[in-house]
Structures are given as structure tokens and as C-alpha cells.
Length: 320
Image (cartoon, rainbow, N blue to C red):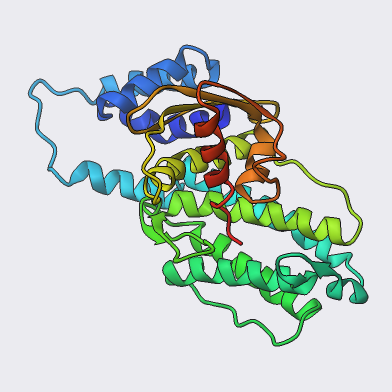
């Protein structure tokens, strides 16, 4: 979570904190933020002072449903910071792709793509995966035109707008189970993961189309790269241990450098520890199957066989 996300979350909670209505975890996050944010600290002092005038000699227990109703009303007016962040990341990548497609010439739509035949096929594929999420959320599904070109561009753009606008004022949705796009049967996962995937896939296809029409590759913001690796780290243990191979894998540590880098620990059952070192953005391209496991620049301490297995499984997690 970024500093701005934390700041927004504290603004959502500070009134409840002044009335001692936060749960222990929420109160701890507010206290930690106030120690380093003068603006929020001043607001907290003002609200605490006002709250003291509301004190009563005898504490009257609040109705059990009151806290839920108050928070539900507040969140309806101001959606939770994480939801705004995830939808914003998806909308940002969609805007970049929309700009690129707006500059594509008519004859560029038929340029070849190794996975979806043509540039138009890439956009139709992306629109179909966006439509699957829209359907799971009960949002309108935009029909795809038969041809390619500006019509499929317009349909994809409208479908992405439906998702962004449809989630703008929702609350309590991030744990909702929806389908993730996948080359096989789509697994049911939380909406928070699906939104990370939608931004991820949109970026990858932005670069696919850019390569087809002679544009350079792009790099997402660091926090988006980290969320992509977070998603891969959630999916990898099950994908590794759920296959037919029965070898013990043990604990795998990913140490990723560069934009969005960090460390991730994957509990993959009994066995020794293995550490894989690589570039964070290149690892996300591996997850999208835009880098082969054997061509990814990396190093390993521990078991080379486990490292090879992890990288090969990671390359199967993409949407196409």
C-alpha cells in the first residue's frame, strides 16, 4: 500500500478513531500514520477535542449494527482506498492503450500477432476477457463487432468504461469471487486479484500492439509491478504443488530487483530453501509468457531443478 493509500485510509477512519470506535488494527494504523503526518495529526487533535464534549458519565452501548451502518454509509460516499487504487491502475493502462489504438492506421489492424493472429484479434481477445469480468459483476456486456478496426476498438473501450464506472461507487466487493482470465478453465478468485490482472493484461497487450506497429515497450509504475508479482506469488504455490509432478519443492524466495522490486516467499511444501534472483519487470513478462523460462536472466541459490520448475510454472499463469 502506498503512502497516499495509507493517507486516504486514515482520512476514512479518523472520525471513528477520535470516538475510540476503531478496532485495534485500525487504531494502530491511524496512530502510526499520525506520528508522521502533520495534517492528519492536526485534524485528529481537533476531532478528539470535539469528541470530549460528547463524553457521558455513563457509557451507553451502541446498537450492534450501528458501526456497520456508519461505515457502510461513509464508504458509499468515499469508496475504500484499495478499490480506488486498483480501478485507477486498470483505467490508467486502458487510457494508454486507447491512445495507442487511436493512432493506429487502418492497415495496421491486420498486422500479425503470434498469439491472436492480428492486432484486431488482440483487442478482441482483451475485450472478451474484460467482458467476462463485467458479466461476473452483473455489469452490461458490450457485444463485439464481427470485424476488426475502429469498431472493435470502440467496443473494447466501452467495455472498459463500463467496468471502471460500475466499480466507482461500490463497497465490499474486493472479496467477491469472479473468474480470472486463463488459458484453461478460469479459476474463481477475489475481485482484487481480477482487477490486478485486468491492468496487467491491458499493459501486456499495449506492448504487444506497440511491437506490431513499431512502438517501444512500456513499464508500469512500481506499485503496479509489485501488485502483479503479489498476484503471481498468490497463484504459484497452488500451481506448482497441484501439478502431476510429485517432487518436493520447499520454500521458494523471489528476490526481484529494479522497478517494483522486493522479496516474496512462496510456501511450496516440504523441502529445502531455494532463492531466485531476477529483474521484477522481466519476471512479470515471464508470468505473461512474453519471456521464456530459459531466456529470463536470473540466478539461483539452492536447487536449480526447483528454480527451473518454478519459472516454467510461472510462465503458464498468463491470460493467453
